[in-house]
Image (cartoon, rainbow, N blue to C red; front, side, top):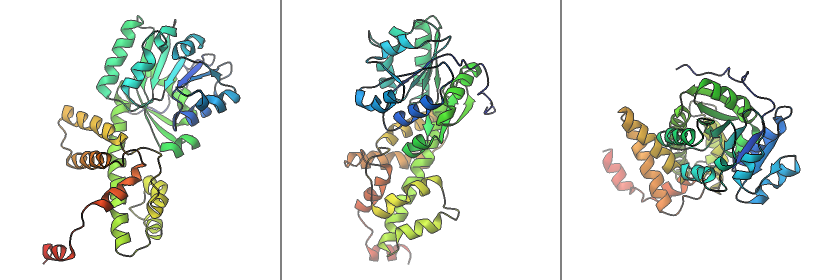
Length: 324
């Protein structure tokens, strides 16, 4: 299927409210962009595990609700959009289910947009379950994002949308203030795109980590090196965003490295399903699994630099012997 970028036109419902659940590092700035750009007559409703995370949004005009059920019941309009930005599929189902869950509060048609990175197969199963439980009134679409905290704050995220055309039109129009939404195919296509994205992200950050350790041990200034490499074939968005971290060994938490294990696992599942050989993917999963086991998983993905640096060095004599 050819990617669609022209889906921000009707059927968008300007008088339908938007709900946003999950106000973490990515969710809070995304919700702020939606609040600022919401259509005339629409309200933004929010909830989160920590009410304090919604304070700035509420002060700017968002409506706070203690539970997902109350949020769903408050969303008005022909077809409200409910955006979920929580860590994984179990978190999504926890938001939806139970007496205080979102589905308990929805009484009419609604579109649930899953911006979380989850299993494509699990997402399809979730859509079937939601449709069954709501007599088809509520549908699910996937729209995972890439660009990190920086992209979320700047409103420059890449938004990977999968679902039916009419659902994608609505999701793309609502999410356009957060970045560039593109409809890539049927339900689950966004999650497969995100898995491919994470393969490239993991490979790039590992390459940068290895290069930074090698360069530093050889006496080079890593900051100057990465500034220079940014103008050549090694230049990338990842290099631009992470180069300071590598130069300063700053791995303070942003996008936690441990989440790549889950994401790369989804990529592996699709590789198995499609019969695709992935020699590099297997190495990446091993590296990020090992660094997480070493206690580094809660830090930024640039912590791969510290992990590589902690590995046993090749003795100079042994290295020379390999090339003699």
